[in-house]
Image 1: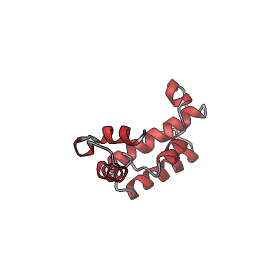
Image 2: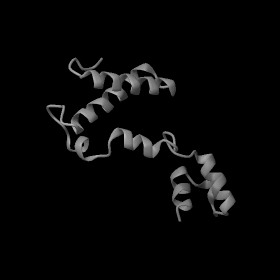
Image 3: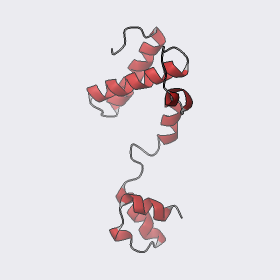
Length: 108
């Protein structure tokens, strides 16, 4: 565990987040780092940490942020998915567009 003084609640939270990330195929080291960041951010948001950055206290909570992004995966739709949608909508020049350009074209 990265911290010695987490409460029992935060230890459980760390374990749950880490397990969820491992289940999704993340490497152990990455899962541990992300879980620790989530727990530390929640501690800062709830006044349990000695120091807290402005983004830790003012940004969306980790749970809310994950809930908002849960259906898009890590990078949202793939370029191929965007390309197929662009083809269905008849977007001109789609074959030479990047993922970002396809997203922009489809957002109009």
